[in-house]
Image (cartoon, rainbow, N blue to C red):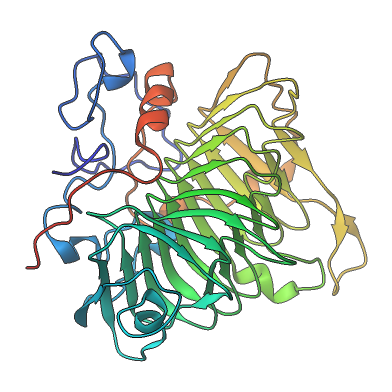
Length: 369
């Protein structure tokens, strides 16, 4: 019932704790289609044990900076009954309504968006129980709050500045969970212009160049407020920006990034990146962490950001290329912002689980309770 990420309860992980030893390998009944003898089906403390128990159990359950996102918890259930871009029963009609809504789908298939689909505050777009793909354009979360997007596919966005999910300006309390994103003309997820308190979890990114941009320009000094958590995601051969960050704070944990084309993670002006227990597996390019100095509009000096790596696993000749210095110790500590997060030691078993379980999943829609 719960899908791949429902095998264990949440545990507290202090930011300065050393990773615990890997758990013993054992079959995990929560992982569908597991093959006999595959080490990836280890019993692990993976997040979100109960979010598929009932329809609204997702609300407020994100880990990390987006943990307060409740989506349409206090609204009615809105059923999408057509794959049309607009009109009665369409996704666009539900997203533009002003009242809180929990949006579910009675149909599977592709919705071709002729323009950005703007999502208003207090909405959950819940793709569980169906397979719905958005193409043509993407979602726009503009000056909104409390939005959850779960179990959706995004593919083939075309046009100048077309992102899969565009979060700007001044949006907050956002959770993007268990989505598959690929092949857009600009970014897959862009978070800019003072948008903050966001969690990206269990997503699969593929067939793309500039994957995730957080903070768009060195002149946007108000982006110092940005705070994003990215965890249990699979960056699958995407070229760069996993993510690229300016100004803000990003907590990366238990992600698997492989076969990038330039670098894995980039810290630009004043960025603070904490990379904990992630798996970085190089292809032809080996540089994992890259620093790009820039000048903030209100400063005189040109500077990059800082990255602290704790418990990361570097495979196939990956070169961390980390800078040392006093700035490393100034990188934020997650437990100063949220008390718990679910993290496993980086391992080959975790890598295999993420390949199976990140992105859209064939899970049933929970009961309306």
